[in-house]
Amino acid sequence: MRKGFRGIEFEVVKASAETAARLGKLTTPHSVIDTPVFMPVGTQATVKAMTQEELEELDYRIILGNTYHLYLRPGHELIGRAGGLHSFMSWPRSILTDSGGFQVFSLRDLRRVGDDGVVFKSYIDGSTHVFTPERVMEVQGTIGADIAMAFDECPPYPSTYEYAREATERTHEWAVRSKAAAKEGQAVFGIVQGGAYQDLRRWSAEFITALDFPGIAIGGVSVGEPKAVMQEVVGWTTPLLPPEKPHYLMGVGTPVDLIDFVIMGIDMFDCVLPTRLGRNGSMYTTHGRINIKNARYTEDFTPLDHECDCSTCRRYTRAYIRHLYKADEMLAARLATYHNLYFYQRVMRGVRAAIEADRLLEFRREFMAKYAMEDDT
Image (tube, rainbow, N blue to C red; front, side, top):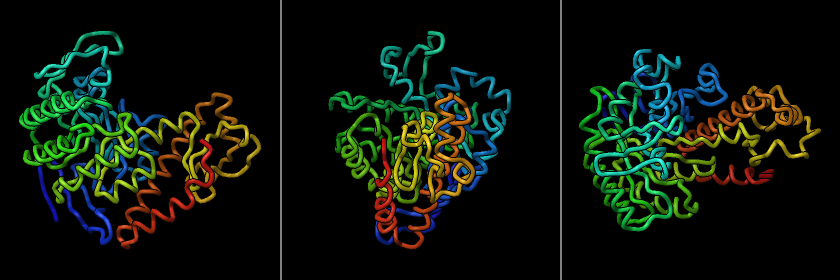
């Protein structure tokens, strides 16, 4: 199945024989991306602690930028004068920008929501700004991302049914306006909202699907709800999405989450966990997540992960990396982040190979049999 839209094309190459998972190819003006895919978060035109060369070395073909942060600093006009975000940050592959909705709505004390948009204050200098769907699409168009996201309202967890319904209705109205205001040639994904309410999720999935966006995201998850609720929401929503379009689960998740939600039919993920945890001394390994700051690693002269062949694991020991953290050396965050992003790539390569071989459930069992053995978080 192949579907072409403005700026992108998506093809389902193989559907899993045992789950809702599928292999796909997402083609943008800047790269061809094998799905399911994990996308590192580059909030302010940088994936923290990494160079663009290292991201290419790890074979990441798409990363995220954040509309809210880039709008405030350095400003979308400056990025436009630089030739767009690809040129500004010297990244030759694909970029997806979120709409900034999550960041705006997480600043409860600094914003005011109305049907037309959101008035908010900058966390940098307190200046007042307005985001409307049209303004957000203008900013994303100037930034020049391959994929832009429609402006939406992300209700927190928990939310009352009345608030979740109002936010969902506003998201629908803004989706229509976002699509109409999109820059010619730029792909825009719609976002399904609805909180933790099944009828609202169904309503939102039907409405956003009818707008015929080239891809559809599930938003409003991983906002503080229990894991079981997140799984329920994704389980309700994903079967309602068009099978010929990419399904993007926003802000998720752990390595186990990625496997579980691929099984449910998700194609695209983003999350700050591998980079944020790496900067704070927490590393993913085949046998679980470890906190390298723990005293037990003081004289551990073994690699972070015996089954990993990334450059960090090939060259450096746990004892050395722990020393770097205790000494506040910036190299610690760089080595750990590189390893964590490599680990996420290993997981996704394994997932794709397992789908190809029709053994995804077996892959999950094998992964889980090892993953909890060493977790000391």
